[in-house]
Length: 394
Ligand code: DP6
Image (tube, rainbow, N blue to C red; front, side, top):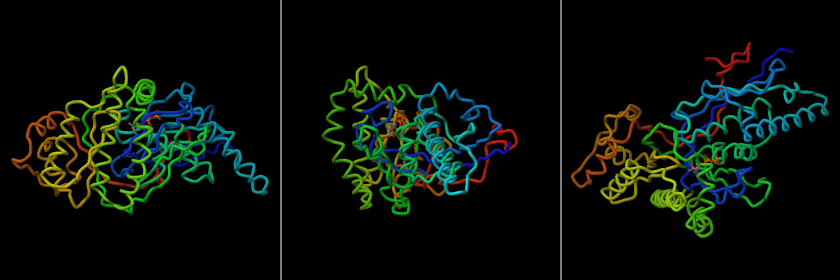
């Protein structure tokens, strides 16, 4: 009667190479365009979430990075709790009909404890990993039969980009057509094993809370930007097809080119919003220039930058080009932490590089995170909950 049932899952961060920006339905988080992302390794960035249910709990509770959140204030959260419990109730009804009744967890309050190993809301896609871990851990606790695609529809309602964290490797979020959102889901383009050479380095520019939250920023863009209409109607449908093809063909130069122009257009739409939204700063622009310098000196597109709703740069490259991409970055940033993960990389600087951008970059980056493509949510044996009290373990 006083048993505490619990399950733990870890979920990854994903960084879009074709951006989601704009909602056609704000309540359901239905996007105005399809998007594409690469899932990053959980060795470097992840959310761990333990979901537990017990008859002794008084109410649903959620702790995020050690702090209790007010669930009832979040419509997104209350919807997810309700929908996940309804799915469990169905499983219980079926088990009863089959003569093997399951524990009636759907009637018990939930305690959820979630921890990120990176700063929340610093433009490092913490909500994506967070909601993916939330949905996956409860689905595991409830033994839900739903597929990752079906669970992605739930995660999407928490945070749009979270749906893509239900898969590893290379992922598409198909915008869908239906008004109820039942076809707006994430699908796998290719697993990580398809292109395991894909690496990413994140230049952490600012770990502060971001300026305009993406949810309100998007609405501002949808309402006011003319460029955004052109993007959604004329650019995105073709780019979505082209980028999927570049991934399936493992054509890095094409993938990189599309990734960079898509990031640029997203930030141009932000600037075209009124009042304008700025996520990039001088350090971000220096990162763009440094990537251009790296590609120019290599005489080949070997690195691609992309920026989300914040100033941090994410740079994609292939393992075979590691020294040519990370070497110049390390020459500008040897004083910051994060290089210990890539101990063999030698600093590399040549007179052909325009040094101005390297100096600006060196002043504005506080840390690098060297990572690579990774898998989707993983089951875990650890528990963030005290199995006797149901309170978070500190
Ligand atoms: C710039 O998924 O955080 O990172 O659905 O309102 O929670 P909500 O927005 P969110 O937006 C992410 C925007 C982006 C681009 C992307 O990840 O595709």
